[in-house]
Length: 187
Image (cartoon, rainbow, N blue to C red):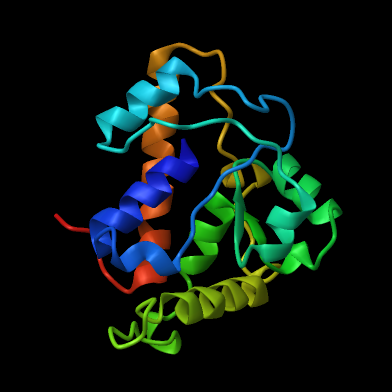
């Protein structure tokens, strides 16, 4: 759900053509390789206006971690699994809610401004600066409790739980997308 909601949020704010500089992908830390999206997840995505079509589960590989400027996970366990893969992943791997918490503490004026004259709109440079600033805050700006950085996996749960998790992810993504793009959410 997270990958599709994130991609949708970027496209809504930037327009599909302008979000090309930021590639949003997903992969799992275990199982579900080649599996379609769970039906409840697809329903929730459609409720948000995101397109669930074409989703196929894939396993997280070294090559994904190596080329990623930012890795967002649902849980601390997932984060630990990514970091254990090496590739300096610890500096750019966060749970979604951890990254949200850190991003909200970063002064946007310290980040590069979007630049419409650049092919990617300056978004890649801004995103890399944001990730570096968030990594620098880690350890200084702690969560009230470890559980507050978790998004629970609704796999196999009823649709009401999926909707609750969809709301949680959407709320956590909004400040992240604002910080990445420099554009506030549309009302």
